[in-house]
Image (cartoon, rainbow over all chains, first blue to last red; front, side):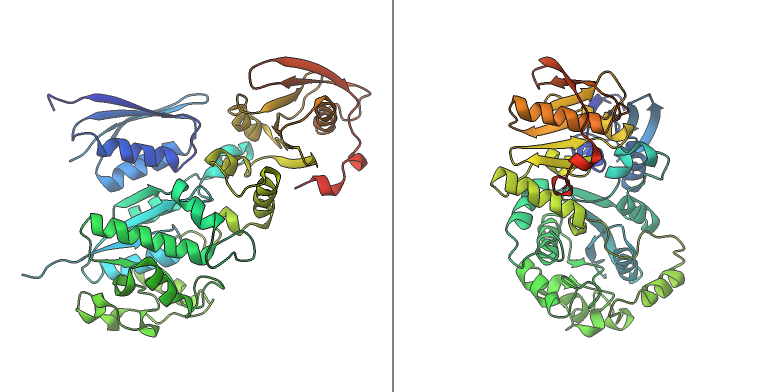
Length: 78
Length: 347
């Protein structure tokens, strides 16, 4: 965990499932314990990315809903 | 020691693929799901765009199914590769622009590739003989197996008893006797099996997950190709065919008129790619203009935009015309009457 790195991913304007696919592809490049902040404009990410995290062993640390933007912070699992 | 075999299941988000995966999981096989995103999948898009749908559940059914089954799901972006399937279907189109048989061959081909890359043993699908008029018939089952290259590594657990034994059955990786003999368009066997598994909630029984099976969408796609003189498209084209009222007053330009605020908000993201028109003196829909209009065309387009705004009965409406580079001009127009918009303009 000492080497945990923060990453970010911009999925604005993409509609689900593309934000999920981009998240999936990004996470493949990361290491266990790394954190990824995903920002998007499709409200569907608030449901789909947490589901994707649950079935793939990652943890959602935080979700934020703005007026037009949504943010999810996840931690990469083993 | 017995080796635990691994199967990759095509998961559409519907009931059949869910059941097929569960049947094989119950035989002790490790199953992971795969879902292909072509750009034409109905999942989520229109709900995300339309304001009136914002309160509806926005779940992705393939993810939801995977979670119910307790399996991993790999969603694969095949947008670029899928173009060749749609543009040059070897087996042609269905009732609309749906190349269902080619699509199935393509997806099983991709699943086989994934299977090999990830050291899985076989592929399963939720196909049922006779379920779909184009792609799920007894005659098409061997075509899909052979053309995809999956051959006898492709197992259809729901109708396996009507098909020759596959390698997983012959090798004893799965028990053929515990597979099924579903056939035809009836949903009753699937619903009964779902009840046995305790699945009391599932998505639409079958089909309905692809815009290409939709007549209205298909007409817009054909119009797009005809107007450009080439059968090609980009993802943005695919998205924009899903929103707005599409109007082609002349061969050289098409208008996409937002039908509600959610669509207008979505279309705002395309302001730097298209000419946009907006009523400034009255409320009105954002409109994108695709093509090469001249000044006369822009005036006609402004009259049409005014027709769909709150100033439709006014003598004069101000309409802004903004080019992709931000250059703007205001046109004063009299809105067209409804009768002045021939049905042939509406795509």
